[in-house]
Length: 319
Image (cartoon, rainbow, N blue to C red; front, side, top):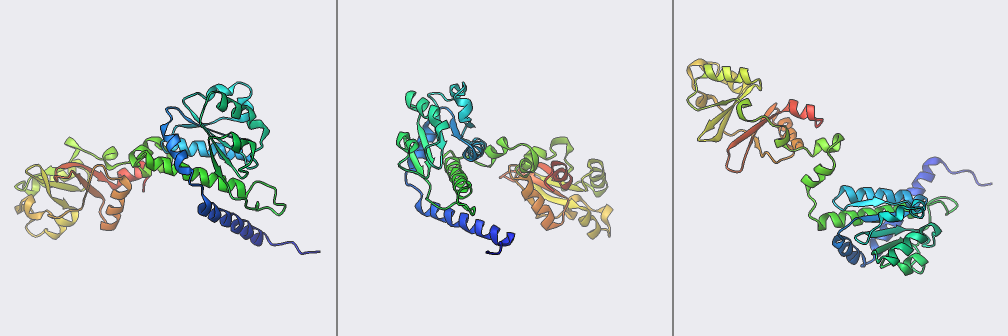
């Protein structure tokens, strides 16, 4: 009797099997994906994704990824579709139907519905000669790679390839639509991901909240401004532009005769700055690198627009 394999060996074998299948999928990917992306970009409605069993779980994930990257999409369960949810699939939509064998009985009503109402239909299947593939407008064929379980039956490799192919479609559509960081932040406002995509402008202090002094402002008044505004810094503004920054470090370096000086004599003239539209996480990186707690935001012309403090990043959940 053969000794049982260790869990480590089993896990490694599964990952190697699925990794090899993904490599094959990348190598053998159908050029028809170009037509699929073009077709999906052109529809005025939604991308409806469906599958049964494990393929259904993958279909739901693909629909969610599409929707979150700029391609309106929804999952429709094939069983529910046969009992009224076919009404969710309109002439303006397109359908992506997933079946490893291509012979999933539960998809029959959705297939018939797409043919009857001329809804564009994309099949994702391992079997290019299957019923699903023959009925589809476009077919994305998965490599005939072995499942990763010992029985070679449980959906493992096939679902991994399908999910990866769904990701590939979503990213291709995302880039074709010009979906950028701002769009991504709009669809992901919550949690850590939303915080990572916040812009400096979304949290920065501006207007009367800013500690602003001029080059001729005496240091007594400058210290009062720094204290009143509570950021530990002052912006030296000249002709409407940020000309320098006064920090606690500048004060310590100029203690000798400090009160007899002007702000323009004490300020650091080449301060670190950031654009208002930059990500808050980028501002945090600059503050960490420079070991500073506040950063002024300026526009392309150098005009002062705001100030972001490290506490703002903490409150937003970035730091």
